[in-house]
Image 1 (tube, helix red, strand yellow):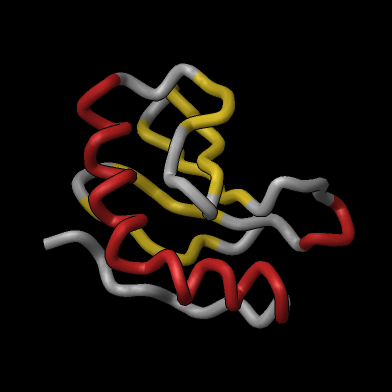
Image 2 (spheres, rainbow, N blue to C red):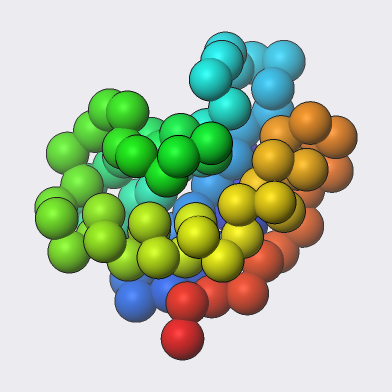
Length: 84
């Protein structure tokens, strides 16, 4: 699973679609915590990521939603800038 960004101890990853399922989503890892986030609305769809981590991921998602959808659709992964 390629890592596409890292910031504040969070790592954002996306699986290849062939091994995944809808809805389009990405994963966030924060130490021992993980969460899957819907690309369309930025909401956590499963996981145990703490509230602070969820807020940071949603803020980052808001900046990169279009790029995330493009990566999901094309399967051409690239690094995205971190949340500053």
